Length: 552
Image 1 (cartoon, helix red, strand yellow):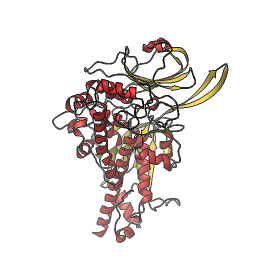
Image 2 (cartoon, one colour; image 1 turned 45 degrees about the horizontal axis):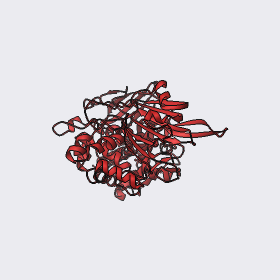
Image 3 (tube, rainbow, N blue to C red; image 1 turned 45 degrees about the vertical axis):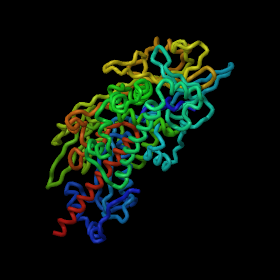
Image 4 (cartoon, rainbow, N blue to C red; image 1 turned 135 degrees about the horizontal axis):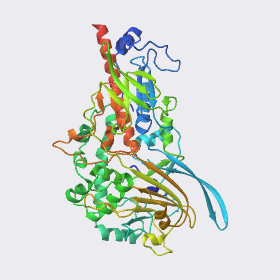
């Protein structure tokens, strides 16, 4: 089995509103639809494959990653699931992305390796995730979409007989080294199958104020967060992230650093906080326990208690399939978004680097605004402070590891997953050149190793780690493709320091506002579904107002 954390980076019933039959009948009238869509959008002939007739509602989505793809996907679901059709307006969505691929952080590289053993060499092709690598069984959107699209899931927690051990190494000594399988994180059924492993775990971290209580807290917080699905599935939506965090009862988890919340507020053993909470935080977000808010650590810890999956061939396929049949324009830089008013109607003009201009009723920003070069005109953006993004190096190395580099005897076996403890002192960092390491055993001597680090692992450093080193693949994640630092929210009530509102103005939405709270593939789909609900409810309101004007 590929180690669960070898592929780990992030942390994962549409109730529609209808109107009366009389209103529905009125909305067949093209003149009424023209009234609320505006004169600048011509009446179009209905597409034969469209559910609705009449002119289209034009929606621009800027960004074709998890957030943009899921916004389009759920908006299309809303359109197709309306029973009965309360209006006859098809939605035409245009998705822009400056890159040459769909998926954003869900990126896969194909390695063509030659595996030699006993003088016999065979080629082996491996697809390895470079970014958003796994999702959990409670990540309902990703799991359900994978099934809908008939994608094959790899169960990363299934026991296939391969070793899957965890170690905690601070660069000098091993504070914990497992001899049995990982199974799942501490405090869950099946974790640390060996009696000796359990004994060492409890001896180091304690029975109650260690792994058992920490995992219980993570499960409690996750249960509170999962209530968000009830809201968005029922068609409800939210326009500010801080509001929904408070409604879910999670504000204290985002207002304090992970170290303070776990150690001081919840009295969790400090060694466990440094080595496990800190280790999984660095593995997931490349952030320290004094740097990141507690919610990021809790969700990362909770993910380890779930069955974990990825899609065979690459997670990006989920988002490609979400955009099947849509008007996707790759390699297209958006330079400007301008808000214009005409005859009391608000429209948005999107301008691309190629010089093309197009007019839309709705614009959805599904890319990080602080890292964007887009110019906004007639749009209030004064509430957007600068957000810092992680600079992440991913290094894949094929070869044979050197146990002596890790202070182990020459014949020792190195655990499949390494956690690096997070120092408890602010502005201090581990001395180890990487923040996490996961290996996949290819044969008796060769492994494929994935490193996450904040700086480039130079050849001389890698040569110290490996007895033999073959193919080395590198990738750098930076803004806007990376994820933000998940810093605690401060201030009198915290609201003024939240990164951005989701609804900037009516008809203009920012999906990535949710990334200041948490950044995973699944939470991006939650944000996308929320914005789809907002767009839909806005269309309902426009229809209602149009009908009222006709009635008057």
